Picture 1 (cartoon, rainbow, N blue to C red):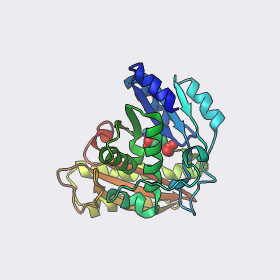
Picture 2: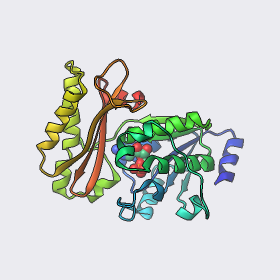
Picture 3: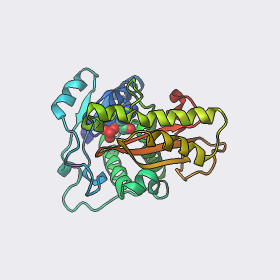
Length: 282
Ligand code: AMP
């Protein structure tokens, strides 16, 4: 893979990279299409990264369908699919990790200890293998994108990070590989995440700036759904992820993590901008 990247670079062709954990859906494909539009060569990786899952999380159950994914990718003019094994990435006596202090400790980092250490480490390895000019991430995982932007800047990776908007079902439900775990009834229940965020966004547009009240709107919406159990609802600065009391000048991100049955779903919305502008704000 390193050889391919060097050859492509020698030929003066730019490399676009979309890292994924597979079980591909339209959200992943939207990243690939943009990468295709911006770069000459498109590399996609599929790797369910063990180090970003906690011991009680769903690593072994995480949906995997490499054959189905590979078939889907043939329709997306992907030049290289990189699907390493855990042993390819974490060689014996592996002992080097990347931690991004501060913004990693909020939200997903607080709920999922060690999660961003695993994410930053694997993305650092993947960037060093693939050597992309541009790497594409989804705003669905807004905090992840912010952590990776910071890592790329701090460690001087020669890669530009692009963040693209959340792709949703018509119901508003954000596409996620984990949606495969949901029954039809749970899927209907899961639309409450987007509904709550949209209600808060309307309140923001009507002038509401208080974190407590914006969070309260989402909380009330989610409380009305008996199948939903809140992990967190939080308003944070969209760049450094510090919790906010009040939305001020800088873009703020309203984020939710909610269990529907045993499945943990996340969603978010930037306050005060349209969904299209959303991804550019984080
Ligand atoms: P994953 O396979 O879940 O690790 O996701 C791989 C990439 O796809 C990450 O950058 C995600 O943020 C992005 N992604 C996942 N779901 C969506 C979605 N619904 N819309 C846009 N991007 C997404």
